[in-house]
Image 1 (cartoon, rainbow, N blue to C red):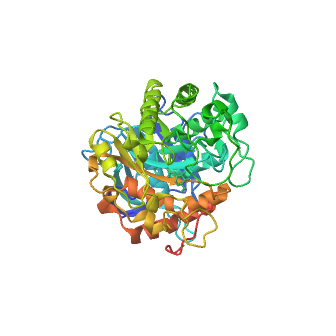
Image 2 (spheres, rainbow, N blue to C red):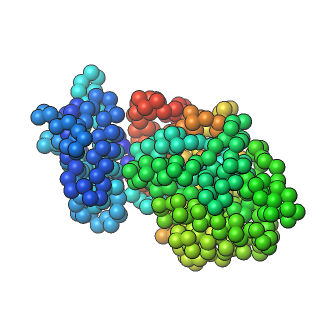
Image 3 (tube, protein in one colour):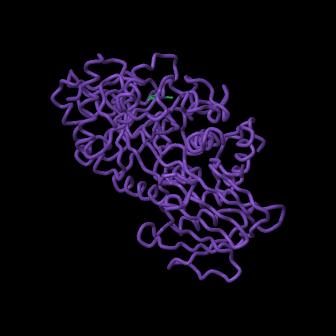
Length: 491
Ligand code: TNX
């Protein structure tokens, strides 16, 4: 194994080391597809202790003659033999320098993230990288983090920092939970009242906030340069008090509900047969889809505790249709699988309370794709320990090893392995008041989930991961990123 999280698929160690104190990036043939890639690579390698990076793009200095070459180039033969993953890459470090090849630009950034973690700074000596050949590709195409910006609002700066951390562990989906009882956190041009009237509070006693469409644009641009897709969620037909607070006509009695900043769930709901309901849904999902670059829009569907199944099923059918009509693929929490689903809709498993999951397995067999977010493993709002100052514990305490040591194919008994689209961590923010608290919940556990999602099952090893994650702490400290010094790791 090499000191990389997530552990790559194939590693052939060599003899010797390559000095990398001065690296010169040569990005070949990327002018059309990813002209900014060399900048990103220079940025992430330049942040490593003892490494200075130049590149031959228009804005850079000319590489010094004694710099080590880092060549990035596209090559469809890159990656493990037989892999067809769009993210596959190869990395060769030898006496001649570093060569990264990949089928698509995304793989070149993955290669650079791998290289970043391979840099050693022994004692006071110059930075170096052990000679090695890596051929790598992910186990799952969907490797995500769901982040609740509704309970506590996190703005553009914090979200950009989250994306940077995600990209460093090759995670590629940022699912933003944009609406809930406590707040509406995205501008909706046809419904401007929502963000105006329902974003001023949060569960942390703060003043809330929301993303303007310009900010959402900037966020997606930042994400795209790191090959992270943003999957936005408007949660309906429950978790909807932020909307019923604005529009009385969404309530049977016509009276807007009070604003809410508590942490109960399941009390709010839409009503299918009210005339205002479908136009509301059509407006907000159409606006959201229009603002979204990616293929997916999430419509929630969780914890609708006060609705008959028949009415709930009508909502699922309508929301799927609205998302599809807006040109996107629908995603929903697992409960939606209790209703008939369109083939191709993604459902997100989360609830690890003991229960019969036959409905979910049946939906998958009928064509739904499944994203795995088992709460007792990857809900990163669960406390690490009983006395942890942030988070909750309804799904149990979740230490680093709990997030690491689980097998996706065993998460839902009877679920056909080929219906698993991927793995997504989630962080709900009822009890996470600041960006610093947020990162303390994310790290180190998010890196553990990343390895579950990327690395082949037979390449995972808890004891080895513990050593590797301790090395990552240097990068976090250097970048000023908070993390939890779990006693399970020797930091
Ligand atoms: C359950 S998970 C919820 C959220 C809460 C979370 C707290 C899911 C789909 N719904 O509304 O914030 O638990 O951990």
